[in-house]
Length: 269
Image (cartoon, rainbow, N blue to C red; front, top):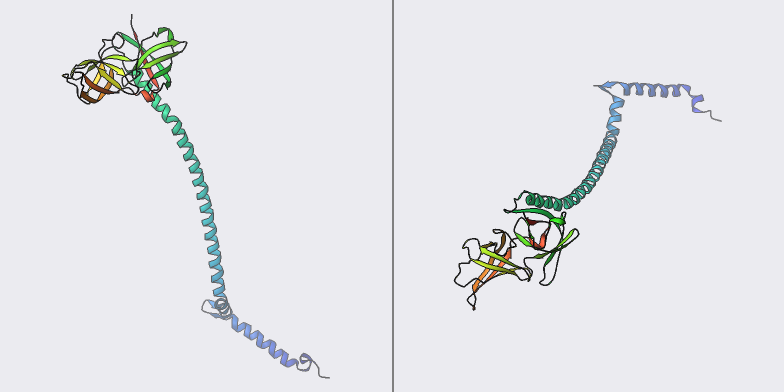
C-alpha cells in the first residue's frame, strides 16, 4: 500500500511550503508606495469599494434630503396654520378697526352751534319695502327727546321717533313719512326732501330753478328739526315736470345701509 504524499516525499512538501513563503514575500514587496499584494487587492476590489462608497453617499444624501423635506413640510404646515390664524384674527379685527375709526371721527367732529351730541350704537335697520327705521342703543336716554336729529359723519340719518329705556327708534330720512327742509348748496334753491324707500325726492322746486346733477342738497333749517348745513343727499337725476315743478332725485349722503355709530343732536338750553 502506497504511503501518503507527505510521508513518502517530505522534501516535495517542504519545497511547496518554501515556494508559498517566497511568493508571499514577493507579494509584500513595495511597488512605489503600495505593496504588490495591496495593489492587487485595490485593483481587484476597487469597483466594489467605489460602488459601496457611492451607495453609502447616495443613501446618506437621500436620507438628509428626506429629513430636510420632512422638516420643510412640517414648517410649511405650521406656517399655514399660523397664516390661517392670522387671517382669522384680521377678519375679526378689521370690522372693529373700522368701527373704532368711525367712532373717533364722530367724537372728533364738533356739533352744530347751539347743539351738543351723544353717541349711540346702531343695532338693526328694518322696514320693507318702503318703511325705513333704525333701532339704536343709547347711553343717556334722559337727554334724548322725540324728533331729535340723528346724523353720522357723512350726513343726515333721520330723526328720533320714540324712545324706551335704553333703545330709541329712528325714522330714516328715506322713509315715506320723512320730510326735511333742504337747500341746493351751490345755487341756494330751497325745497323739501321726501323719502321714497331708498332714495329721496326734492319737491316744490320750479322748472326755472338752477339745479344740476351732482349738486349737494343740505338741510335748510326751515323745518325746525335739523340745524342748517348738514349734508342730505346728492342729485342723481333732474328733469322738468309737467306741473311746472322739477323732478329731482337724491342719493342720501349718509351710509344708511351700513351704520354702526351715529350721533344724536340735542339743543342746548
